[in-house]
Length: 81
Image (tube, rainbow, N blue to C red):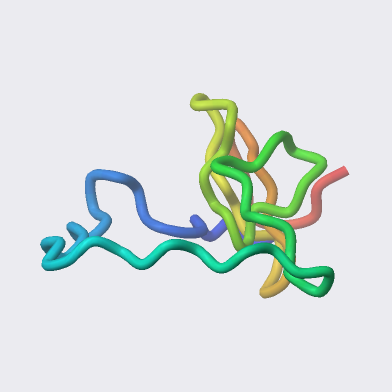
């Protein structure tokens, strides 16, 4: 485990740009459309690399490597049993 933090904390995330015009309506779903991204990563059994917001607010998204990260209470670099 690298135990690098994935994503930024809300306190350090950049502010969104000011809205200048209403966003266009979303396109209707198609058969090939990807599933919508959940608002948070459900548990430690799910990869939070693409969505580093953990549903458990006491957990943080930690990287195992460049492809896998999970929501954990804490993390120590090295091999996890």
